[in-house]
Image (tube, rainbow, N blue to C red):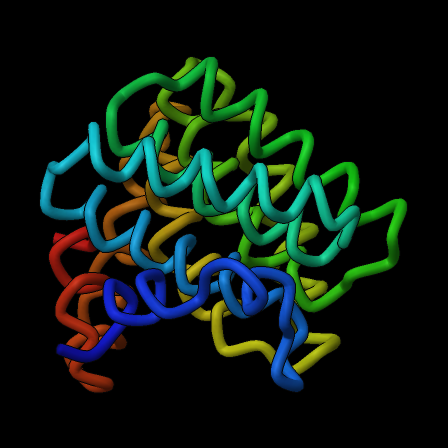
Length: 191
């Protein structure tokens, strides 16, 4: 067996805090990726257990990057569950820490689910403002996630704001980009 589940099983005990040259702690990274995957297939109970463990490991290590990364994963889980206020609380914590700890590479990755949670919570204006900042930051660091923020994320927020005529062309672009790069998960969300 390979992938996040195997990594989680391996990265225990004396390996729990190892980074192996990665920005986040490897055990936090593996648990966060597994949290996303489980959330996408609707295994929310297991995702919550794994995600909470990722947050605990990161907090115990007091490693800012890992805390942000784990919170981004746990907040995305809450978003997928439709628990928007819980998602917002966790993701705003991640965004705040990202800014105070000067972690610019994580900013766009946190903006994406946080803007979705804002849009789903009748906070379309907050989502649009945040997405604008996320697109600018992604462009400044060369992060391709900026394309999704500019198309898929922005179309979701515009739709929530009742600006359908502006949202539809961006949604179509998001679908085209996802198809071009064979990102099936992003394509499903864009559709």
